[in-house]
Amino acid sequence: MRQLLIALVTMTGFAACTSQAGTHTPDTAIAIEKAKKQTIDSMNAIQSVKQRVIDSMSTLKRSADRHSTASHRNNSSAGYSANTYNEPAAAPAATTTAAAPVAKKKKGWSHTAKGAVVGAGTGAITGAIINKNHAQGAIIGTLIGAGVGAGTGAIVDHVKKKKGQQ
Image 1 (cartoon, rainbow, N blue to C red):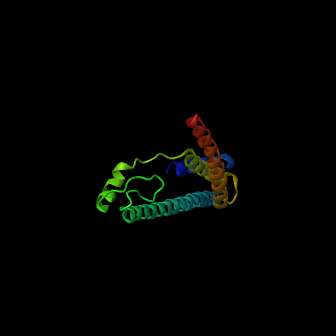
Image 2: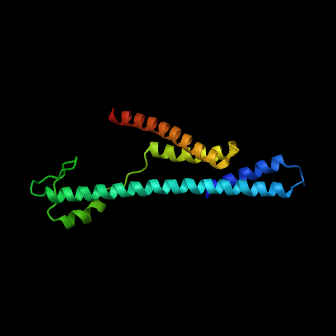
């Protein structure tokens, strides 16, 4: 919503700067409405792509959790699970399923993820403003911004990881 408001204010400002005082023609009004609609459509397209990525990541996490639960059940006689942490397997499978969400702490976003999201948003707005074809500009800006933001965030993550090891 915030991005939409910024885009609309920016486009209104550009429209006000390019038109003569009091000479709004019907063509200008139509062009402004068309530009607003294209911006909204491009932001909706970006939002739907983000939602698909989030949904696919959730699906992968659920399947990994199911696989981990199955490993606990299969290796309960050995005393250790097949996961990389070598945690002792719980006795009943129902206890493992119920206790898992309580025991795991939710981790915050990495700098790489934050950088990608911020870069994608900034790139979308900038691309829509700069390019005459606003939808195409928003898409290109999103891709470039996400790449640059993710790269910058990865550098920050790497530096923090090094400092944590020392």
